[in-house]
Amino acid sequence: MKEKTYLYNTLTRQVELFEPNTEGKVTMYTCGPTVYHFAHIGNLRSYIMEDVLEKYLRFAGYDVKRVMNITDVGHLSSDGDTGEDKMLAGAKREHKSVMDIAKFYTDAFFEDCRKLSIKRPDVVEPATNCIDEFIHMIEVLMEKGYAYEAGDNVYFDTSKLDDYYVLSAQKEEELQVGVREDVEEDTNKRNKTDFVLWFTKSKFENQELKWDSPWGVGYPGWHIECSSISIKHLGEYLDLHCGGVDNIFPHHTNEIAQSEAFLGHKWCKYWFHINHLNTTGGKMSKSKGEFLTVSLLEEKGYDPMVYRLFCLQSHYRKPLEFSYEALDNAAAAYEKLIKRLRAVPEDGEVDKEKLDEYNSRFAQAVGNDMNTSMGLTVLFDLLKEDCSGATKREAVKSMDSVLSLQLARAWEQDDQTSGAGVSGADAELTAYVEQKIAERAAAKKEKDFARADAIRDELKEKGVLIRDTREGVQWEMV
Image (cartoon, rainbow, N blue to C red; front, side, top):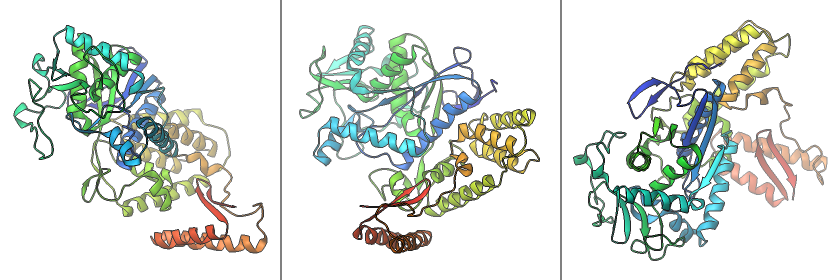
C-alpha cells in the first residue's frame, strides 16, 4: 500500500514526509526501561505510542525492524551522571542482587506490555550483554580525540563538536550544574556538558556489576549503551529513534554526539518524542503521589485497554493529564464501542472497494503525525457506513492491527463470569459468590475500592479466589 507518512521530527522541529534510508525498510530504535522498579503508566504512555507507530508503519507497507535496550547497569538517578545507580538503589531497597532485580522488573515490564497489547520489539538487548561493544566504541572515540580520561573515568569532550545542542536547541548558558544541594559538580569534566562514557571505582566503590577495561575495573555510562546497541543491530544509518520528551536532553543529545563522532557521519534521520503524562500535581514519577501501575488500575476495576484508549484519544505530542474521571470517560467510551461492534452482523460479502477506501482513510488519518484520535474517528465513521457486516468486521480488524484495542473480543463468546463447573462449588455457594461479585462490581462503580477489596478478602477467607480477566471476573476454590 505504501501510504505517505508524515512525522514531527524533533531534529528539524517540523512535520516532515517520512522517507527511510532504504526504500520500504525501516530501522527503528526505542529507549527501553531501566529495570529497577515497576513501570508507571506515564512510562507506558510512551511505549503505547511507539507501539502504534511501529504497527502503523507495518500497516502502511514498510518492513520494520525495531530494537529496544534494557538498562540493567549504569543509569544514575540524575541523567547528568550524578546520584546513585538506579539498579543498585533497587537492589538495596529489596535486599536482592542487581541481576535478580533486573530479571524481575524486566519480566514485569513485558507483562504490562502484554496487558496493553504492546508488541515486543524484534530485538531486546540488555546493556550487560554488550560490554565489549561499549568498550570498543569508547576506544574509537579516544583514538579520534573525542574522549579523555580524568579522575580514572572516561568522558566525552563536547567542545569537539560544532553543534552539541542540535537536537535540544538549548543554550549553554541555560544549563545549571549542581543546583541541588546534594549533587556536586563533577570537577573531572573539562566542560560542564561533558558526560561519562566509563566509570571506574573512583565513582562507586560498592558497584555490584563491574568489568575489566583499558581504563580500569568499572562499568559503562548510561548514554553509551543506546548508541552502541542501535549500531550493533541496526547498522550505521538509523531511520527512527523514539523516546519520551525527557530523553531529549541530555540522553538523546549525548547519543547523537557520540554516535556521529564514532561513525564520522550523520546517524539518525528522524526523532520521535512523546510528551508527559501528568497528574494535577505535575509530571508523573515513581517518587511522588500514588504510584500508578497497570496492576493498580486493574485492581481498581479498569481494563488495560481502557488506558490504551485513553492514550489514543490524545495526540502524543501534547501533555496528557491523568485523572480517574478521565479514565472513567474512556471506560464508558470503550464499553460503548464494544457494544456497537457486537451489533455488527456477520452477514454479506466483503466489499473490497469499500474495505480499501476505509483502510486508506485510516492510513491518511494516523499517518498525519500519528493522529490516533482521527484514526478513531474513521473507525466510528465506518460503523455508521451503509455496507455489509462482513466488510465492517474486516475493516475493524485491519484498523485494530494498529490501534490494538482488542476489538475482535466483541465477536467472541460473551461469557461473563459464573461459577458453573467450578470444582467443589455447590449451587448455594455459587449463588453466594456471584452475589458478592455483583456487590464488588457495584462498589467499584461507586469508586468504593475499600469495599471492593473487603469483598475480595471476605471471599478469600471462605476459600474462594477471584480474578479480574479480560473475559470478566473468574473464580475458583482454593
